[in-house]
Image (cartoon, rainbow, N blue to C red; front, top):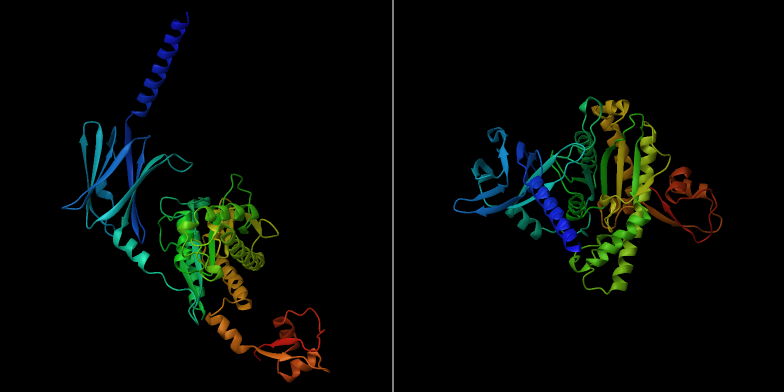
Length: 442
């Protein structure tokens, strides 16, 4: 009896495995092929009708990449691909039984990386082939600029969310988040570049995708003093609206600290916030203290900048919340770089989408971020920067003696009482003998 039952179970399992295998082996059509060009790589995206196994290998003399997609057929027209700025000269296709073979004839050698993506709300099954430039990777490893250069610019890394095959949220009138935020990012960079002592660096300059960790890595590569990520919100209820400003939450900071300590042997040139300190030669206790110091300082600066930007946006736009919000977003998790995320509004709201796609509103949003950033750094410039040197040159000091009043000191030095209070962060006019006051430029 038991043997009969066991045989039934075995037959049932065999059928399940056979059925699963047949499901996996169903033909997958390649319905569309797209190409995206980034500074260091090109991305080919193949839209599939279902899942399909694949393998990739390279050939040389001449340089080629071969991708075999099992049990698949090609419905897309490869001749429509724009290969002009890519490392690909031509894409050919053929069949080897049920296997679809795609051959990429290359202009020069590249490093391929492929992976599959499961369906989401916007796309079905996808097969992605990234072609990385070998020369640019080697160059990136060799070119690491020192951070502490006297009179240097304050570097702001500006991150336009999404890009390429990831459009982000799509709002009324088919306005796409990736386009809106890139326009705002470019305007912010323009404002910063026109201001002496500041320089903006974009994590993406065009319509291509950069990974979340790749965005923070780009900020570190540029030795950024601040990371600003720009997005546009979305919600299933089209009535949701309002801009918001975000910083890293305590829980997010704790988890990231654990992650960095776990991989500190690979973190030889990090923690720029405390003087480009390396973690790899430190014991766990010292490494933990250094990380904690760096993250505490960067989070304090993040909150200060975020508060200023929140107040600036509030002057012309509705805010989703009356305060700066906190979350564990990956792009906010640089331990040594103050980081903020700005949601410029709900692109899913028809009214806000209509504003966000206009050049005038994009400029307003960029200006609000620009003023929040520069106001913070004018108060607290990083050491050895041009802004810090200018501030030190313009400000003089005065030691309070018996008989002095704040108004008398202001009059003697030819400055206003208001500016004297402001530069010394005084709430009233009370001063003490021996106190050293900073005298602003007249």
